[in-house]
Image (cartoon, rainbow, N blue to C red):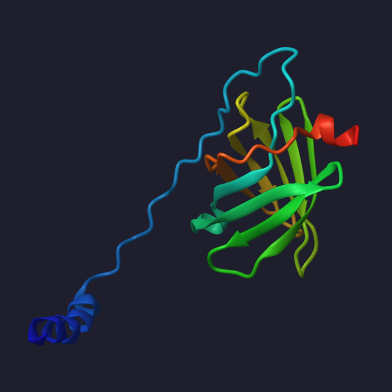
Length: 154
């Protein structure tokens, strides 16, 4: 017990003495790979881990995509800010577009989806016109929802 308390008492002073480490650039490459011709559109339903780099600062979070009727909808929860609603998600081939509601106005994502449908990368455009890179990786899941094409027929 004494050792643990000593460590807790000494730790803040050791941290305060450390020099700040300069931020390194994060290389966010966007190459989702080839798209299979004539393949069925991937099912986006699920949880996605994302990384966005606004103004050089990494912003991690969780994006959840589900169905609202036959259409996609969802939420985006960055670690440092409050969750926001993904109002619109469209997929044409491997081109993916999303509109995210924010207090200041719509934020848009334009990118590419991998052929397997488990990775996306592209550009986020803020309401003021600033652009930033973003990548997202779908979490593996055993849950299988019907693809969007089957949901439209319901």
